[in-house]
Length: 109
Image (cartoon, rainbow, N blue to C red; front, side, top):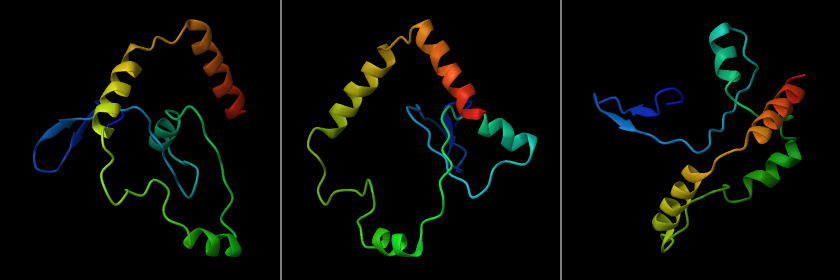
């Protein structure tokens, strides 16, 4: 999906898959060239500590973040389509791209 923007559903069909944001998680840092290449594609990275025992109890008592509402949200599909169109029209200035590259280098070091 990251390279070709297509999803192979396993039934011999490839479906277009526009990407707006990719979030990844792992239990360990990459230790091979293949995984280093994947790791390199994430602009921002954050290492987090394991959840404490007490924190786990609090976490398990909460609804899942992003859980689907009981009823569909009216107008959500149209709003997402508008947002997607607006995102396609954004042109990131060169100064901003250079700044992001610097932030990435700083975060990596």
